[in-house]
Image (cartoon, rainbow, N blue to C red):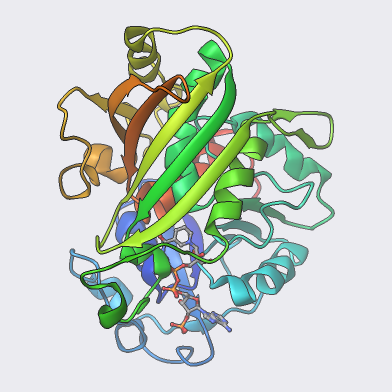
Length: 349
Ligand SMILES: NC(=O)c1ccc[n+]([C@@H]2O[C@H](COP(=O)([O-])OP(=O)(O)OC[C@H]3O[C@@H](n4cnc5c(N)ncnc54)[C@H](OP(=O)(O)O)[C@@H]3O)[C@@H](O)[C@H]2O)c1
């Protein structure tokens, strides 16, 4: 172990998001993976035997022979990234936080706890203060749903500059969003499935907390009406979303594009290792954005936007694309941890 780095553990290390954590953290300048944990079925096995590695980079030797641990709060690392299935995440994360661990989670379970921040570091870095209200010895911090993150990054500059009245969004979500092994190939190949359990509720509610304002001990939700329809499509990685917006004040197409292109925030100012230089990249080409071409822009940490045009029902419409397991999960969570470290939350670990 490198003594200059903070040791971290990954809960749910064998799954789709867990593997992305391993890939993204393997050369991280501040954090080093010290422990990998998963279900009882995997615990006790070597990681290379417990996980079916599906990342495009090779699994590094240093992880192959790590023994997978149980998800019990007896791990040595005090910073814990959770990529646990939501059927078990709530209880396990609470146990870890009670025992003094900082749990930064991708699961939905704690996102709406009153004292738990739902974080996108560019948008609401000040919401981190909420953890001072928590009664845990440690803390729980959450990352939003993978479709929410792309959407709120696109909405934030509009909300700040022109105000937002209403949003309509239709998603085309990748297969990897359903975890591993996920959907049966016969269900998704040659198909579109117009239902993803719980997803529309998340897209209609999470942006309101993220764009909300921090009071002394809670968040006042943003007053925006959002309607969402979610579809699973036969794309491996990267969620596309067709968005319509009604603004509070008038704006021109050029003003909106400039608001997106100029958008930078605290992670960029702090030069955090995982922060994209440009969180939003606008494409003028009519056929863009596309998953195949744009899922990895800014190493998968930016949202690609295109096709901004006037809308006869709302004011404007456009298309966004973002990587669901990078910006929408592991990468977004690592960025939260970097923000926490840069703000002194990890000084006493
Ligand atoms: N995939 C995405 O794009 C995405 C994006 C944002 C958020 N998320 C959220 O992130 C979390 C992980 O998603 P995923 O797609 O990586 O799911 P996944 O591929 O199904 O992986 C789930 C992980 O949870 C572990 N697990 C299951 N039951 C457990 C138990 N009883 N005790 C301990 N560990 C257990 C599994 O370990 P075993 O292998 O040992 O069973 C596996 O490591 C979910 O909450 C999901 O909603 C996913």
